Image 1 (tube, rainbow, N blue to C red):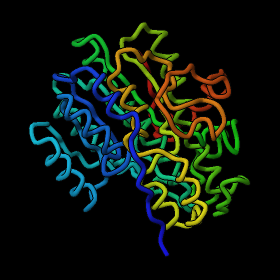
Image 2: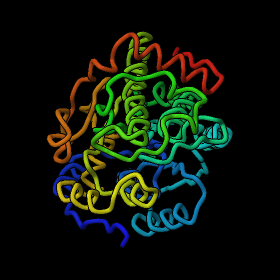
Image 3: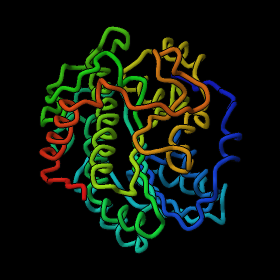
Image 4: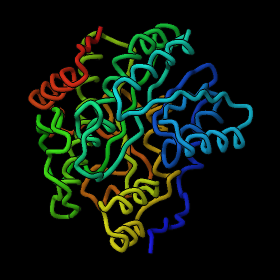
Length: 339
């Protein structure tokens, strides 16, 4: 018997959406918009008047999602660009296409896409499938579109880089390890699937989500140092009802029963998108903030309104930031200079 998503009601989405300002004249790129929080964010941004660039791997799912977005908001401007985050070559091609359609700059890049608890497999570039999808390819994407962000900031006073982390950044480890950012795909602990006892699938996911938060800390520090108008912020969705759970169960990362029990205390995909939506559009969110339903333990951060918090010391420190930046540049074989 396969896992079935629960039908969770949205409790806070409408209030937030109605409070957000118009995004007319802005261009927003979002990775992973075929379902879940990314789909919700793309839909909301379209309804608020933005030009929305949909960055997804080409598939029937991406075609279906595009059609649904057009039907929901026929007057919106949605632009499809193929971007497979498991391939650096694909990311580079996507960045070239983004440059072609963003003559007036890119106002927001939202690094939403992610995979969870997949098998110990390498990408074509040799990295773990989770760390490349969730962090390294986003690092490369931000590096490549950085000139477009600078242009938007000069024309419209600000631009934003939005990363998407997780409750899982805290467990089973709070220390980022270099081996997960190196070409060790397929040799990072095997396929242990215990979510509560640090199974290797979940440790790799933890490292990727920790990297998302550390990347934000790096960006914030570097942008502030040059007095940039570009902001860097990070969100987490709590325990949101998305396709991540279905895929994880199907791939053997979690059991169906335990997933169903956990999701009983989760929240809808709409409420899960509150954090990235505030980071994308809320003028009150400043650079260097973490936005989500809570910052305590797992159970206190599962659901609720998205509030803003400071970055946490276990990744916002000299050792972790230097490690993250050095290893990420080595992985993409390019320097990333913030100027």
